[in-house]
Length: 335
Image: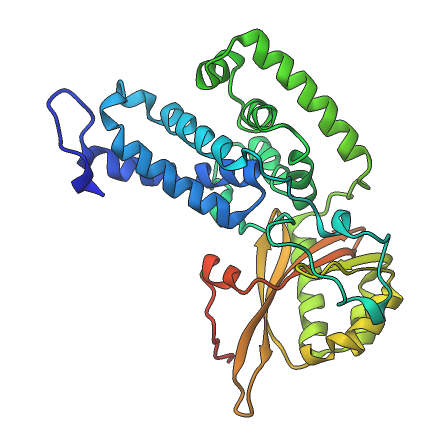
C-alpha cells in the first residue's frame, strides 16, 4: 500500500505509518467484531479502515492522533456496513420453536448472515496489560454478550463499546462521533439499560479458572475423539443446549444431545480435533474422516461453555471458511 501515498515534508510518512497501522490491527479487529458480530465482516471492515487511512494520510495531524483517527475511520466503516442490515443473533434466538426434536433437527436452515459468528481470541483480544482490563475485554467478546450488543442501535453500540469496554472518556467519544458529551452520556445510559434487559434473560455462568477450563476441554476432546458417548454425556449438564448454524436446530437436554450423536451426528466418529480459544471460552476445531487412507476434511468449529464443571452450551459452526480465517490447515496430518 505504500505506493498509494506520497511522502510529504512535515507529515506522517507512509514508511512511518505502515508498522504503526499494523500495531493497531488486532484491537481494531476486536472493536469491529463487537460492532458487527461477524469475524469475516470485522476483517473486511479493518481492511477498509486501513485503505481509507492510507488514502487520507494528509488529514492526520500529529503522530499521537493515530489511534483515535483509526477508530473514527473504523466506526464510520462499521456504521456504513450496519445501515439497513438486520441484527445478528444467537442460533437459539432465531429458531421458531423452543427446541427441535432430534429427528427434525436438520430440517430448517437459517438465512446467511443471521447468526453471530465466532472469533479467535488471539485475533480480537490484546496481549498483556492490566488483568482487570483484560478480563473486561474477554467478557466483551463472549458470544452471548456480542449477541446482546446487536440489540443496540449502531451509534449506541459504538458508544457503549468505546466507553465501557475500551475505557474511552466521554469527551473523546464525543469528538470521534462528532457530537456532544451530553449526547454521548445519554446514549450510554440508554445502551446500558437495553443491554441489562438482554443480559437478564441469560443465565450467568459461574467463573471457572483457566486451568479448570483446560482440564475440562481435554476430557471433552478425549471423549469426542474416541466417540465415547457415555463419557461425553457425563460431561454435559442435564439441561445442556446444542445448536449448529446454519441449521435452525437446537437441542436441549443431555439425553437429546446423546441421541443426536448416535443418530444424525454419527458420521463424526473418528474425527480429528484440535483445541482453540474462541470468544473467551474453550473451543475446538473438527475435521471429519473423508477417505479410506486416513484423510480428513474441515467440518466445524465448536464453541463450548462450561458451568460448574460441565458443558452447558455447544455451538458447532459449520462454515469451513473459519478454518482459513483462523489459520487452520484444511487437510491435517494427525500424529
